[in-house]
Length: 291
Image 1 (cartoon, rainbow, N blue to C red):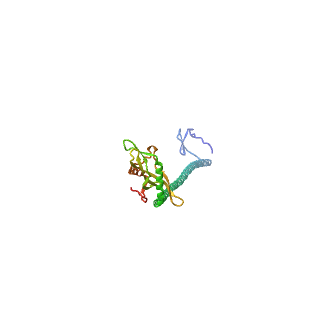
Image 2 (image 1 turned 90 degrees about the vertical axis):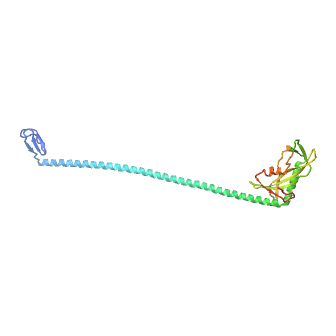
């Protein structure tokens, strides 16, 4: 390629290019470009270079776009993995929590079931035991009331007990303005016989009411004092016969074993005063129960 002077060949003025034409700014002459073969090749090279540059630039832009797209895809994939891991973690935690709650629920349910089962069985056992005790007490009551020999012996024991603790001891009658004293003058005599069954323990007891004769020290007038001797812990001996332990209602020695001046008063205060007992009169012996 050769350089061409851009001055007007006519007047040496400055040429201005307009498209493929050149015009002299001084004389107005017009000229065209005379391309030789080298110029054509140069132009083609320049054009090809521009195309290559444009293609390279386009490839670069495509690569940049692909890179950005790949980065975006990678970021989204990473986010998706993170979200999946979080979801999986939540699922695992939820599953573990549900399993734990289920196990705990089953455990608590089992405990509650055991408690209910134990409670029901305990109630059944307790009820069965109470029925057994009631049956045993009922059989013992029937044995006691049907054994005349046992009853006669217990009445005699109670009579001896009353006489022993009262012999030589006076009673004080406070029903008068001036207190009066009296002493025992005879053997106690049974007037009433009762079988008392405790409602809670179902244990029967034998209560014997005695009438004890006394005489006033000042007038020698005879009066009667009423008292009770009880026999508890009634049971069967090795021969199947009933036995009992002697137990007297306590009296303070200061009152001189005063007892009760009226049998009705004794019945109200001693028998009816104990709500935990069921009262069953026994009238198989002489005197019987007149209540």
